[in-house]
Length: 448
Image (cartoon, rainbow, N blue to C red; front, top):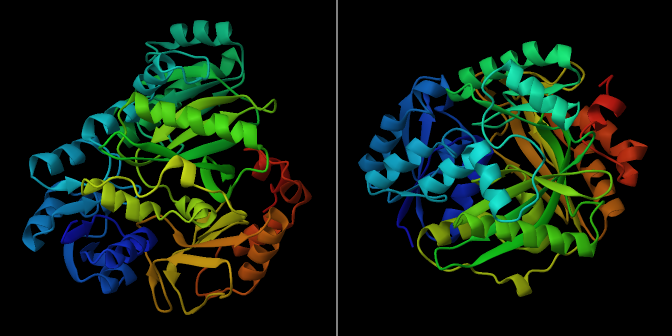
C-alpha cells in the first residue's frame, strides 16, 4: 500500500478521499489555490501545498505545479477525484512518465473511453447496445443533415470529447440543424480543444441509468448495481438514487452484466461508471463511460456496503478487489441530494459568499459528505456544490421521508442553497411514485 497520496482536487471529494486514506494508514497531501488557503480540505490533510492563483487553469488544472507538489512531498500516487484532471489523458500520461501512480485506469483507457466516437465503436464491437448514430465525427452540415434524416428527428449532436453536458444540442428539425450544430462545435472547441461532434438518435424523455463497476489489474471486474440519475438540470445531476425504481431484478442483472462486458472490453482497472439511457419500454443504450469516481458514488456505498474509494486505492496499489460478484448484496434504498450554493428559483444561478451558520442533521441512515463548515468562503471560481446529503432506509418511501426530514433539519446561512428545490422535488407526486425521467425538472419544476 502507498505511504503517501496527494489529492489533486478540492472540496468534499478531497475530504472523502482523505478519510479513506486515514483508514488505510496513508499520509495525505492537499493542494490548494490561493482562494482555498483556509478551505476544509487543506485543514484535514497531513500536508498542504499552494499550487497557484484562484483560476482553475492556474492551479487545479496546472499539471506542472501538481506534479512538482507530489515530488516535493514524496507522494507516491495522485488521486484526481472527479472533474478537473480526473479524465485528462495527458495528465495520466505525465504521472506515468514521472513514476507517480495515477489512481485511475491506465491513460490509454481514459483516452479510448473519453472519445465518444471511439467508445461507441468499442462498445458496438463488444455487443453492448448503442444509440443509433454515426461512428465517426460528422464532416459538415450537409453530411449531418443526411444522417439526421436517415435516423429521423429529433437527433442529438454531441461533442466527441469531454462531458458534463457541454457541446450537446437536441435538434428537432432540419432548419435547426445548421445553427445548433455550429453552436455545439463552438462550445466543444472552447471546452475540450476539439470541435468534433457526432450525430445520434435522440431518445425522448429517457431515464438516465448508470452502473458502478470496479476492476483490478488481476482481471477481476464486478458491478455494484445501478443508480437512477434522471433528476438533472441541463445535464447536471441533482438527485440520484439506488436502486432505480424502474429496474426489476431481471433487468438489474442484465444491466450489470452489460456494464461488466463493457469494462472487460477495454481492460478496465479502478472505479468507473457505465452510463445508459433507458427508454419507456425498458430498452437501454450505452451513453458513455466515466473513468473516475462519480459524485453520486455514496448511494451505491450505502446500498452495498462497499467502500468505492478504498477499493480505488487498493487496486491502484496492485491489490485484488476486496469483493466478489456473488458476495455483493443490494440492501434497502438510498437517495442523494446535491446541495449547491445556488438559487433553485433562478436557474440554479451560483450564490457565492461566506457560510455564516452551518448545522447538519444527524441520525441513523444519514450521511453528509461536505468540504465546508461554518465560516467557509464559497468562491465564485469553482463548482457551487457544498454538500451531499445521502439517506438510506429499508425501502424507497422510507428513504424519501428520511431525506425530507434531514433537509428540513439543515441550516445553512449566508448563501442561497438548493434545499428548497430538493424539498419540492421530493414532495412531487411523480417523484414519489417513481415516474421520473430526464424531463422532470422542465416538466414538473419549471417555476422553481
